[in-house]
Length: 114
Image (tube, rainbow, N blue to C red; front, side):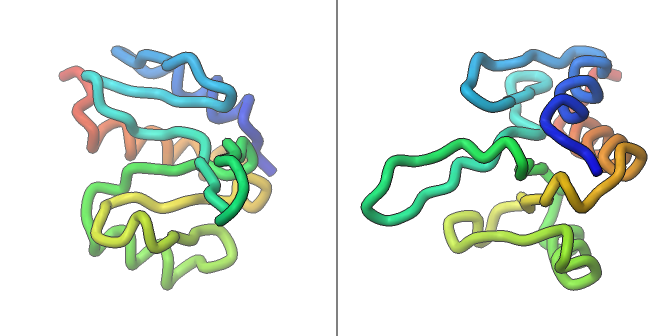
């Protein structure tokens, strides 16, 4: 079971990563986000940053669909992310090893320094 501290530990260990000041977590490489806290929007209520859910950059629609269809207990999306190469991962449903793979892949795809 992973958590926000695992995300932070993994992200800051990668070269060229910048942490953006946030009530949750928000990491960028080359000025481009690759993993951040899920900004949940519920009609009639203020946006809430969910640190138990990470938004990950996945590169393309094919990878997004593979994760959503292959592991629906771990990954999901919302209508506001339709057409974007982003998925949400329920941190309590992944272990640290899998989270490391996901965060590193997102970092690479967003332009990790060579």
